[in-house]
Length: 298
Image (cartoon, rainbow, N blue to C red; front, side):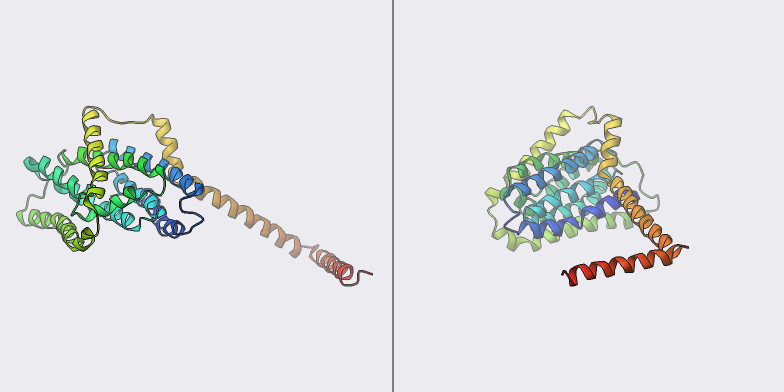
């Protein structure tokens, strides 16, 4: 399960999506320099989270964070359907990963099928992710294919590895666990069938190239790093993790609130102390002088 700080980071990302979706429909924001700057700024944490997932263990919550981070620039570009599809992949990908890991000798075919469902091929529920790339609001959008491929490559690397925790020994408990794992892919396929009217209005030749590029990039990454990990220097990783966790922003806000609290405390002590009456008289005199100056200028 994700630990509390990562879940807090995910919850900070989610409210940004509707905000950027509203900004994307503003003529002063969309297709402008500030919009491109925003996409470039969002690319940095997205790249960091996806690289961390590619080199991390299977219990690392960076998979959900990575696709949530992809959903934010998609919403910022006005591709609301793509943002929703990225969220759907974030919800279903973890269960499909565990299902592939428990497939034993069928682990590789299960991983291939799972990757095909998650990457956004035609007639799958994730097809809408292609709308983020086929109608780009800025050339920077194409760079997001790299973190997308990193996330899928990390999923593939972990899907072909056996799960550390074995199935329960009791047959009835194994049956319940298999049924629970199978529910999510079944619902995912049902959603794909329910989206058939949407597929009728989509040019498959246009929407096919983004998932193919992501698949090719993921396969190349898996092949290139099949015997080694993509690791950052520990000090650099620690600094980036501390920055993107936004703990420093919470610390800064608490310090500002403490400073404001001290100002009010000092003012109340000053006005309520032994010299409080004197300060009150001086304030009244100052107000009367200002009133006399502006009300009776002559």
